[in-house]
Length: 496
Image (cartoon, rainbow, N blue to C red; front, side, top):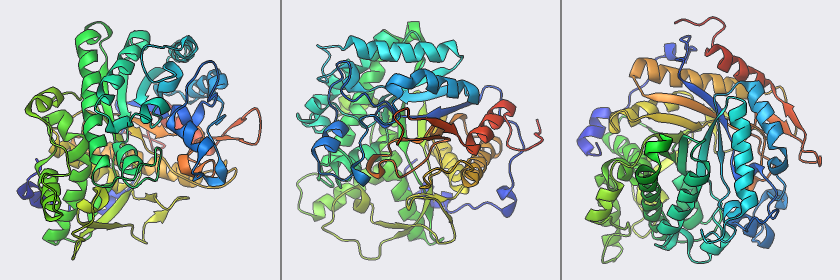
């Protein structure tokens, strides 16, 4: 459903002030509550026990030094040594699942499957065993931004052989851990990976190739996901009976007015996320809107073909239907309007859409410029996903609140954020019929937040990064979330 006629019918649907009230309906008994982390952000042990170098190791040690205070993930939360303490925190919360990522370089130091690191295999087996012993379901991400440096030096996502290399790595993980892991996610956040890593060069590996490299990255990521899905489907699913999903990072793009051009611009922004990174996995190809838009602009710029690489007919068949569950990372919302005079020479994901985006001054600010508190945005996004992708199964894989206080333990604004977003998720399930199966809060604890280093806090446990012990301290938000999980309810008194 990517046609203009459909999006105009969609228009701008708003909620009444009554929807600002907290939903008092209990979450279903089979709804899963969890928390999330990622390997480079928490593990540390960056060169211990045979682990190889990844692109973030390389960046923080060799520059350019773009991380706040020149922070590194060399030790981070020291979860490589303190995973049992992490599991105790998870057990205390009462979570159903824990989303973590495997460090490709810890398993395969060179990135290639010919050399497996036994210590890396054992670390993740020990973590998974500890989780299972405490009744916690592992939710495993295979790639959370930490490409092995040797593979990056061969082009990373820009090398078509990446599809095979990732498939080999995924198969290794299914083989070693799949008997205990039922939930797999291949890639985390294609926008952050491709657009920011291979487009505007603000995240590792800092490749500046807007409108070309970032789209090649996306194509190979889609095919690599499909390769992993087919490997699992053909070799492991019948025995392990799990699922393979993909995590997309998406704002809600709200039209700034009811004007047709602004409604169209907002839909174009959505399609530049979902039409690029989910439509291929469900329907076999990029959405028509995105293909036509980039082809038109490419032609204007003198290219002989579209800058968006096409999938062959064979690739389309290979891609179609390779998504068991949609993982959604959502934090905030932006307003969108059509550009009056688009720059005809500009290239890239953020300009090819020919739309302006900004945040309303009326929206509550968090500790980070990128995050405003707009709870109704997640309900609108979930309904849009339902309407566009035949009510596909969704799990919220990240959602959370940022502050920059050195040690804020009474984090009432984070509690407000979690409560209001969960309420809108419950509304989407109850009132809009969206198939949401779970919610995963980012994050279990404060950690290395990429270019912000340790200045940005999104955890429900404080970590003292000045202490060699990396002492963890529970915040008020952890107690709140613990109660929500125990009661499956956001109000003091829930209704059935």
